Structures are given as structure tokens and as C-alpha cells.
Image (tube, rainbow, N blue to C red; front, side, top):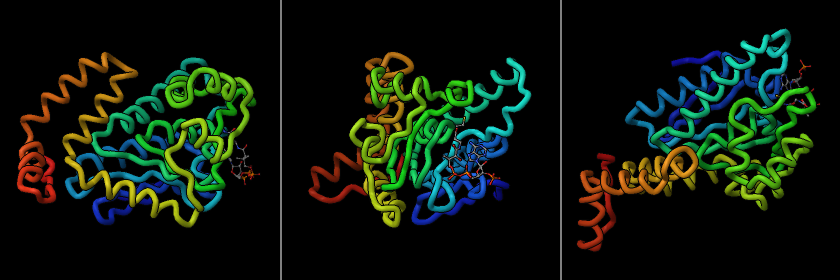
Length: 257
Ligand code: COA
């Protein structure tokens, strides 16, 4: 499937989705948000895809925010619809059954910071900058940012960043717990691949169980979800393979069933 604003490639079981509007610093217009939703959905359904990397084209920006030019003239209702559509797509990333890593290759501002936070893991290049500068435009974050930033860095710093619109650099993001790793830009995709290769070697159904249980901490009863997900593992071939491999002192080969 081809997209207007995305490039996609599958290599070694990893689908890389590149937001491709570099002349606009990969700002998210409505079309791009829709396409990201479709690309992730396709990746989730494709048996050849075991994991997903989301990144931006160029060396300057992951995503510099929602496309501000599309905000002009919106009514209250249209503003709400825009936020709802964005939140739905970002939620579909967060609940994707396969691991999704944001390779943050520069500015991750507004909707870009929100998009990175919807991913399960974030690896930043040294030049990355994060922030929720919507207050400078008379706005607030609308794609889940007021909620997810708290989840990662706590209310104290999250409310400060939302209120001031201040940007933080990659090192600060690492210290605050917003990103998993910071690497030189030329190593960004390599680091994402290494991390995903490690995760890909584990039982896929168990990885989905981790995603569902961790998400449930924030959105429902996490302990109940963990009981459900733990129980479900016992019906999988991967569980049989994992335990047999341990007993037989060999490396497990998981089929993802
Ligand atoms: N929406 C629409 N267009 C955007 C954009 C956005 N969020 N962010 C950048 N662009 C466009 C610029 O308008 C410019 O387009 P042009 O060349 O047609 O004029 C192009 O991308 C390059 O951006 P520019 O501002 O010239 O780059 P810079 O290096 O001087 O500044 C930023 C980079 C990120 C600091 C600056 O672009 C910026 O502040 N962007 C908006 C960030 C923001 O508020 N995001 C939250 C939106 S809710």
C-alpha cells in the first residue's frame, strides 16, 4: 500500500514507517494522522511484521506538531473532532499488539511529542527536542498529551512543560524518564533495530500480554488485566515451547501462537 505522506519498508520483520513531509518538519496534517493509523493497522495484521519503528524523514525533525495551518477557522465542534480523530489513532498505536518504537530524530513537539508517547518505547537522537508548546498558540495538547506526559514523567514536570511550553533536550528527556535511550543520530535506527531484535526473540503472545497489562495500569484495572493476560499465556504454543526449551536446555523458537 502506498501513502501520500508516509514511506514504509519491511526488513527483517520490522516495519519502518517514516513520516515524509520534511519541508514542513513532518507536521501532522489530518491526512498524515489517518495514514499513520492505516499503516500501523496494516503492520499489525501482516504476519511478516513482528515490530514497528515510527520515525520522521530528514535529520531535523521527528514531527514538529500538528499542522498549524489546518487549525485556522475551526469551530469548537471541529476542534473536538480533530482531537478525537487524533486520539483514536494514537490509542491504536498504544494498543497495537506488536511492539512500536518511536525513533525520535529531532523535534518532537506538540503532536510529535504526543505521537512518540503513544509508542511503547522511545529512542532519541542527541539532537532531539521534546515539548508541548501549544499554549504559545492559545491551545492545549489534544492528542492525549495532557494525559500521557504525566504517565511518563509525573504531574510535577508534566504540568510545568504544558504550562510553560518549554522544550527539553534529549538528555533531559532521558533523565525525566520520557525516553529509553539517547544515541548519536547515525545510530538511531540501529539502536531501535537492536532493541526490537531482542524483543522479537521473545514470545509474541507474551509481548502482547505485557502491552495489554501495562496499558491497563492507566486505563482499567491493571491487576485484573494481568490475571487475564497471565492466564491466557497457558493456552499458547509459545508457552509450551518456552518451558520445553528451558527443560531441554535449548533456545526457544517461538511461533507466535
Ligand atoms: N505546522 C505546520 N507547519 C509547520 C509546523 C507545524 N507544526 N512546524 C514547522 N512547520 C513548517 C514551517 O511553517 C516552515 O514552512 P515554510 O518553509 O513553508 O515556511 C517549515 O515547516 C520549516 O519550519 P521553520 O519554522 O522555518 O523551521 P525552524 O528551524 O526555524 O523552526 C521549529 C523549527 C520547530 C522551532 C518551528 O518550526 C516551530 O516552532 N514549529 C511549530 C511547533 C509547534 O508549535 N508545534 C505544536 C503545534 S500544535
